[in-house]
Image (cartoon, rainbow, N blue to C red; front, side):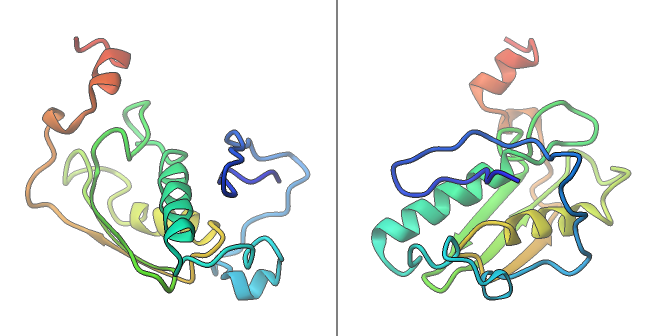
Length: 150
């Protein structure tokens, strides 16, 4: 499967899963598990590596869509905090559009699994928060336009 992340100045487009792609396992792989040269191609501890890693994490978040609104969780404003350290650890605080969301129990794990796919990510902690409550004010202007709210 083609990668959805970037490697330095090169930007790959988001890849769609192929029919012949192996099924995902329940346990997320780490770069060490993959043993690929791709995972060790840069170091998140350098400024350039940290910038690439952050871009790749945001790109990954933009491939995850809200189950009820056809917008990705990053542009929808569901990501409240994204902290990435120089060792490839990610702490992410996110919310959902409503506490009664049907995927509230499983969605943080979906996000976590997707972030483990990003080269350079070694540890992910996703925390679901409800304060402050999500409102449409968190939508980007582009997203508001896309949804016909402008």
